[in-house]
Image 1: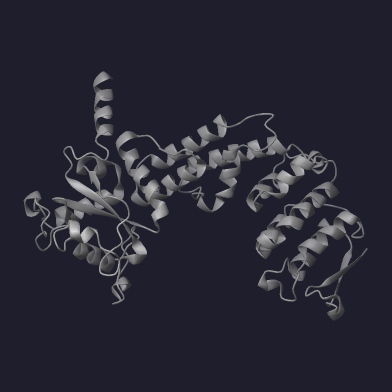
Image 2: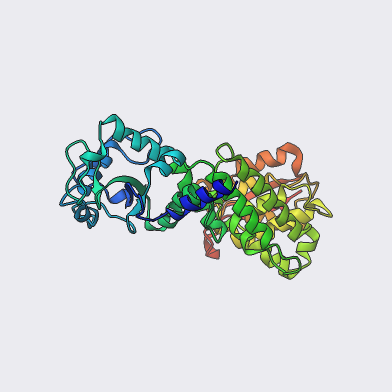
Length: 385
């Protein structure tokens, strides 16, 4: 056990170190690799984010004028390099990253030997990998400079087995880059880190959802697919439990101005988590309807018609006269605000008619065309039971 710990500690110390480094990782802006001569039209390699033509162009730029000069290209004549080149170690990266292992295999299959690579940073021979500082280069394309910390942290994990992320967003970014690089075990470690953040900042009585809890729902666009990272599904379920625990029940939210303000500030995906939870209590179905209407009054213009329809269908079965205030308020917010619902104005008449005909709401709806005299572009709604 002592020897194993010593080895792990030593490997960890090699991250970013020139000691025994035999390759260099270069991060570059993917969209700026190819000049306007059409080289970007190459075939994308399986599992990669760059085309064969992109890779060849980058190799040429890196190997021009002595490696180091090629790396500092401005983007007009060469690639835009992000951050500093990272000294790395083939043994570590090939054993932990599918992408790096595949690129290293290409070097071997191309009969490239260490002897082919110059030691003074000079241009490498034909067929050899590009060099920087006398070491062959492993390329990592990034969509923007903002992705660089996540990419570095993903490679750091290969050396240390630890996820360096101070927030949920950072952990999700590390997961994204690790998934691209194929860093084994990093996805599950990112999920574990997020769980730790959620637990550590769970402060009962603080009066508002913790920062990590707010952040995980605000970053829903970064969530990994459950099929690709099952461990994240468990973390997300835990976050939803925390969210429901904080808000408690519908009546409590409606009668507490502080909770009501917090609820209308939630993203749609968080509200959806509340509405679909059996543990989010309610006194009557009409309270849930009013709750959604309160949220929609603030967030309508920040949602799509598809999102509004999805939230609508999460409502419990209700038996209301459509003349009731809650129902009228709901209809006025959910229905189209412009003649063309497809333009994002709201839920289509056809969809809402189906909702009524499914037996979830009683009554009928009459749609009146806009009145040119009232200065409103949208429709006026008249409800009747």
